[in-house]
Image 1 (cartoon, rainbow, N blue to C red):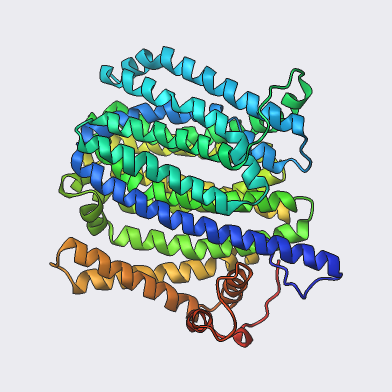
Image 2: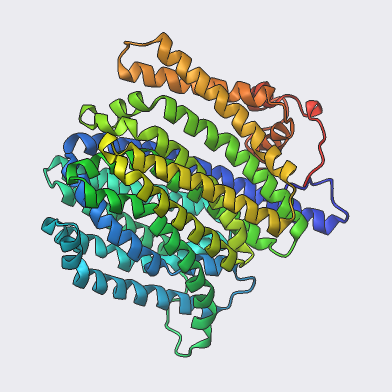
Length: 531
């Protein structure tokens, strides 16, 4: 994410290249942002519907099954997509090797899950989970097959196509097939079918868009090239998986399936849009762009500072608003039978926000292939999380919120760990790291106060009225916070990114005049030293 301006270079060709990369990255961010909004809306529609059609027990069974299936997906993916993006030069044989490896590993994962499903059921004392685990395992085949095409699309910065595939496959799998089967009374199988069909549609669609070569390679060197980086990356991501699911594993062991359903719904309603959709949108673009300039430390410093400050000014206010509006959010999205989830949402909002921002730092480290130090951070996070959960266990009689609080604290510490790692990798000073977060903290405080004020003023109103009013107040507070933020570089960066993505329109257009209300006029920007 290069922040160099088109007129700030030392040679025309270099400037043109930088401007082109910045424009493509900004366009990718805009398409990723659009797909994230669409996914969040679709996800809310799906969640609001099935949470009223299915009970907590069905979601508890899915939570147990996902502990196994999500773990297996890290091996099915095998870091192949990221390996194809990160490698500076890519041959046709390496693409074929990645395609073959993905398909074979997907089939192996399916076979292992099929055999191990009874053991999983015995571990959690839930025999009814066996067919659910086996059904979800079919998704491994499509996940492994799709990695090559998705990696090549990211490598080519074709985020418009990626966005259409991601949103289209979710709508087809979850809103059409999942909701349709839930309405027909399929119970937990509607959730299984939604997951498998979404991965199938994604795999077929990406291959139709980008018909990459699939003929197997019959000698080892291409496999070693694409799998060596992917295997090391998978180790870091497996550690991330363990940390992300250790709390669910703990709750599954100490609580009923229904209580696990309450816990998983609270986690899902917050961390799914923040820690998955939003972080994936940001990190996919960041990783692809950072990989392009991985040897240029100056551009990486400028890009990381810019993308982190812009992402934080979006993520932190969202988390603050969700935390304050938790009771109304749960009542509207999940319904009346999920009241216990409202206590957990504020903690998951903090955890989801820290996780999303950590992904940006992790993307930069992985783009430079500095995977060993990333693994160190992940191991540290896992040890801290395990220790905090052990400390929280004696207090679970007061509610499962103590486990959620442990998750939030561990995610915050992981984010600080990645910030420290990036400081060392890029040579950024502590003052610059602090300045990158000042606008986000300023805006987060403004949004929290605005949402709290609206909630107090409209107390006693229907939940839907309260939630809509709180969302409007949060949006206005965010715009006002950006406009009066004491760090003017955030407005200059926002204006530049929007202009590079061609979202502001021509001079004196309505969009540009509307943007000026929030970002000010270009001549109002105050120059600041960049990292």
